Structures are given as structure tokens and as C-alpha cells.
Length: 157
Image 1 (cartoon, rainbow, N blue to C red):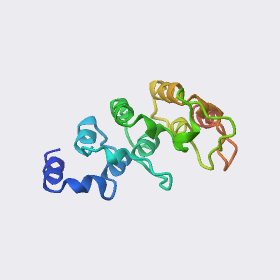
Image 2: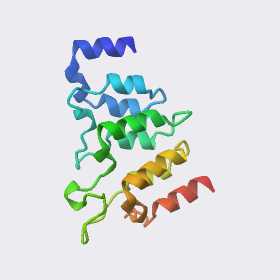
Image 3: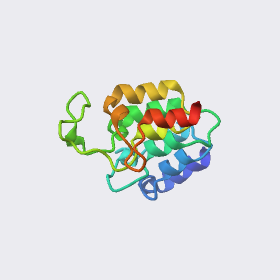
């Protein structure tokens, strides 16, 4: 941690260059302390660009390399950027996170699909996603037509 902190102090712009938060979230040493160190003041590290496939929340939810899913980091990400759970255009949602009628569906998997495919994800994290983005339980993955329930059944049963 000391080395990361020293490097961040020496070059804070590195936090938004090359996505170190994404890299952390893909590894086996994900910790809340490191997530705090890698969060820039403007929290640009959580920005979800629709053109990007990988972003911190997705990397974290898809990380199967951890022994135990870092729920504390997931909660921290939700606190810093609750909108990072959503991949669609934010204008397509009402105030209660429901899709507006006629809104387009995804041509890729949702974060609920990703979470339901990860054997390290605890029920608590799935519940948070369902509570925050209930529409995701109905989203089909265009590649195979799977709903999130299909992903969880393939993996856990």
C-alpha cells in the first residue's frame, strides 16, 4: 500500500490514465484500502463510458480470482458511483430506475448477468443489484438469449 500511495502522490494523474482501478478489480488482491488509494478526487475512475466494455464495477463483479468477493469494495463503488451499475443511457430510466417504455435493450450482458456468472458473488451483492436495477432480471443477453437466472443456474446447480 505504501508504494501505491507514494506513486499516487508523485503522479496523481495516473489514477485516470490506463485505468488502474480496473486492473485492481481484475486481480486477486482487491481491498478497500487499495480502492480508496486509487480513487481520484473527482472520482473519474468510476466514470462509465458507453464505448468501454470494461469499467471498475464490471471488473469487480466479474472477478473470479478472489478467494472471497470483496463486498466492502462493492459497497464503496455503489457509494461513489451508484450509476455505474447501469450500462444503458441514463436518460432511459425514470426516478425509480425503471426502463422507460420503448427503451432499447442491451446488445451485451448486464452487470447482473456478470454477477450471476461469478461463483464468488455472495447473495447480498446480487440482492443489491436487483434492488437498485430491477429491470436487469428481465434483460436477455443478445448473444444467447439468457436471462441472469440462466447464468446462475448454469453455474450453481
